[in-house]
Amino acid sequence: MLTEYLPHSAEKVADCLIKREGLLNKKWSYDYGVVWRGMEMLYAVTGDKRYYDYIANALDGMIDEEGNPAGYSLEAYNLDYLCIGRQLIYLYRETGKEKYKRASALLRSQLENQPRTSDGGFWHKKVYPFQMWLDGQHMAIPFYLQYEAAFGPDEKARGDAAKQLILAYRHTLDPDTGLPCHGWDEKKRQIWADPETGRAAHAWGRAVGWYMTALADSLELLPKENDHFGNVLEIFRELSEKLLSVRQDGVWLQVLDCPGRVGNYPESSASCLITYAILKGARLGLLPGDNGREAQKSFESIQRHFAGRMKNGEYFIGKCCQGAGLGGASGRDGSFDYYISENVNSRDLKATGAYIQAACEEQIWQEGRHGHDR
Image (tube, rainbow, N blue to C red):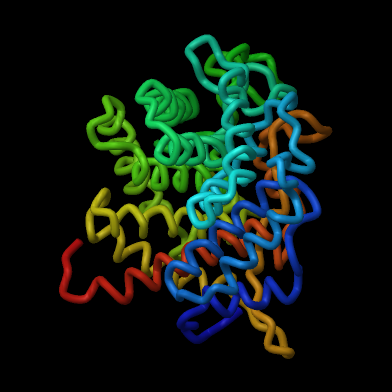
């Protein structure tokens, strides 16, 4: 991997992704939303309209003029599908085109009937009954709050969104490690669920990264006057401190609560998501400045561990877990051995999009931190 510090790496990595992948418009996938969020940030940082056009051209190939999104299924009640909704709202704000508003309203309508646990937590998917996953907090909650900011506000909805973050943490937190586990089964029936607590066995790195980004992005959108703001902020601060204390050479492992176990490895997507969230939290004044400075060090470690360059000049982000889940398929039992058995690859959209987001936050931090104790 790279041995030198790579300045303005968001643009370099994004340009290579665009050249390599072309337009991302083949399916309705949260992976695309992670990349597009990075491009949205990159346009804001650089003013280069190519990054805005990349989002617009891709989504225009997936939504007709009536606002019907190709590949989206309302009936699946899948929180993953909502991740793309943030770019629909973004494009509506930029263009005023009704098709984006109608498409985002369709996604928002999913939450009206999303199945819930007995205490009001969203099921991750209809096919995963009574289960809350940390992943779903990133996919749904910032979109939920961004929709209310753009077309509301509905204070009841805002409170419901914040409640999801609190419930997810409450149900998944392992008091012995101080880390949230990947998921929780209210019925305690799943093969991966503890029969007493319903929690999954381990804190999977990317799941915790998803949750951290959900906290950072949601706190930016949630009014401080909201009754739940203080509770969500307390979780964010508590978890940020804990995560900074469990880094390994500046980055985070595939299985956070198993340092030293044979086969565990530094994982890029988790490291990028957590770094992004802490840098953003410090920039917004939600976290202490020291946390931001530590996260900036982590970004330098991310470049050292994961950012690579081919002989042809192509930049890529390596060491990304291709995918992991709970139940629903053979072998997904939430064990340590399961998590380290999943494929690891380079050029993954999730890691690349998360890297672009972290790199943008780090660039903002570098340009604005001198002379300020944030």
